[in-house]
Length: 100
Image (cartoon, rainbow, N blue to C red; front, side):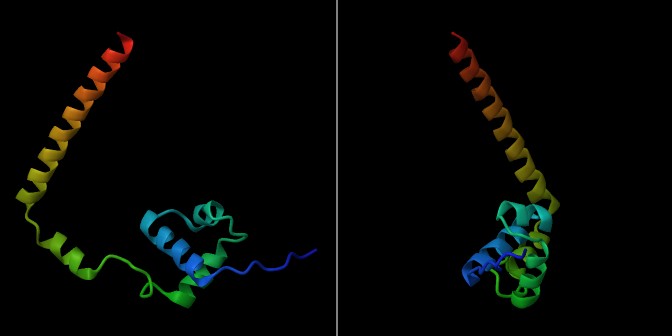
């Protein structure tokens, strides 16, 4: 016995595709997350809408990243490592407070 096909709004389809592209998850996982009956729906939506209709990062943003120097990345990495250390200390202190 066949079920009646579910009708999805265009907004829903685009929302699912945006999430699929941004998350990097598999089509199967994405279909399961949104309760789609079949992962091939994503393929058909991709061919219908293409990537151009989605709000994906602009090529200019990638160009900016490509122009950054190694020093910029090293500085950012060092700042992030420092922030992680600070947060780990705060967490350890918070745990001590909780135990006391």
